[in-house]
Image (cartoon, rainbow, N blue to C red; front, side, top):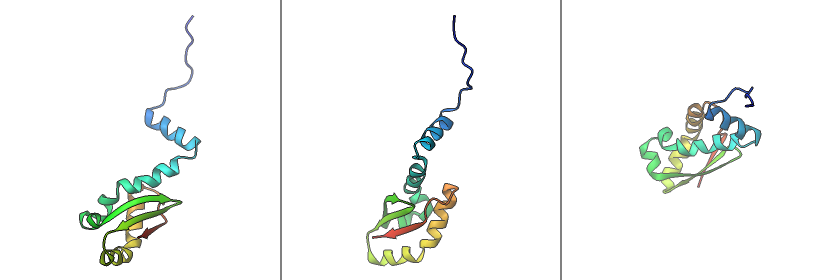
Length: 99
């Protein structure tokens, strides 16, 4: 005789989110989404002279190609953090370090 499943099937996205949360990986995935949306958030001009490198404990590390641009993005850092978090729909990025 065939066994009937009593559990409701979840959409794959919900199942993956649950799995990541169970292994405390959801935060890391969300942090790294900031790298994926960098160009969209900062715009083409800044994206040409910067490269988001990694995120560690809510700090986004970004390489900047020129000192003049480093000064510009440091000046805009608070706005960039706010815009990244707005796009991520959560306060994921706490700070940005430009090097």
